[in-house]
Amino acid sequence: MSKKIPLFNLNYGEQELQAVKHTLDSKWISTGPKCEKLEEQFAKKIGSKYSLATTNCTAALHLALVTAGIGAGDEVLVPSLSFVATANVVRYAGAKPVFCDIIDLQDLTIDPAEIELRISPTTKAIIPMHYAGFGSNMEAIQKIADNNDLLIIEDASHAPLATYENKKLGAIGDIGCFSFYSNKNISTGEGGMLVTDNQDYFKKAKLLRSHGMTSLAYNRKDGNNAYDVIELGYNYRMDDIRASLGLAQLEKLERDMNQLQHVRDYYVQALHSINDIIVPFQNYQGRSTNYIFPIVLKSSNIQRRENIRNYLKEQGIQTSVHYPAIHEFSIYKNDAVALPKTEYIARNEITLPMFPTLQESDIDYIVEMLKKAL
Ligand SMILES: Cc1ncc(COP(=O)(O)O)c(C=O)c1O
Image (cartoon, rainbow, N blue to C red; front, top):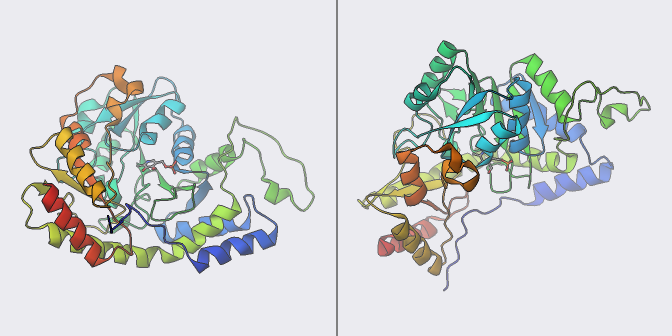
């Protein structure tokens, strides 16, 4: 096998090395000035009033739910077609995730009609997830939320700087959460961000991020050691080493997004003649991050999907699946619910390699091998 094309390629270089060196040289490596700078710059770019750097997006989502007062006896509507964290956090908060299907095989985001169908007297919130950086139908979701007094917590893990009707995803609902996991558009290894325009939520989330303590070590470094603990909080802080990586990555984001859009356009063109597959989100009006490149096999099944993935693997092409359906995982099986479109995607979607420096010649090769596999 001559070629080797990974699913994702980390865009790290001299900027990240220098940023980390600067932080190490400063001798302050836990939550401090770099986190504050990242929060400030991120909030500005997203257009939200407040932002809070966290250990990861899972922690940000959990903080968002607890901050918004969601707990035992409450239900939260979530897409089943997501990473498992989107549902797990609801259970961390003591509430129950209620799974919803996606719109169709073109738009893989949560279906507003499903949201309406599954609202109960105990529903408190909706967590739309912006799959691959394409926004959920926020206009319809916002209307449903307004009519039913529900909160919206956006899982914008895939979507920093992506837009929906000229608004930045993550800054549309009550709280938005982003992931900086190593394969995300901004990579810090582990990392996340919570954004909101609501000062009360921000203050509470900040308190809970650090054990419910009234001040951070960074704020006490000049000798004022007094603090109180006024809530039962967590340790969900980001450290300054990761924040400095985040700052370097944030600077590259615009350019990376432009390159990813070119990669997507080239893929879409190259796949145009294959009738056997669907390329989702072709009608999307906003700007996407193109975090991943999903394709869906038509009239297919899981065995055929795995055969195709195995063939691509033998040709040196790494692929993935986004996602196995959460409601079909063992720990959620008791919530028996049928979500046929999500289940179809879980068995027939293939995620092809996607990263800013993916070459046109590599895409030609991937498409040629995919045609052979089909
Ligand atoms: C849609 C979605 N939600 C939540 C998460 C959790 O993010 P993190 O790994 O930063 O906790 C991820 C990460 O893979 C994700 O893709």
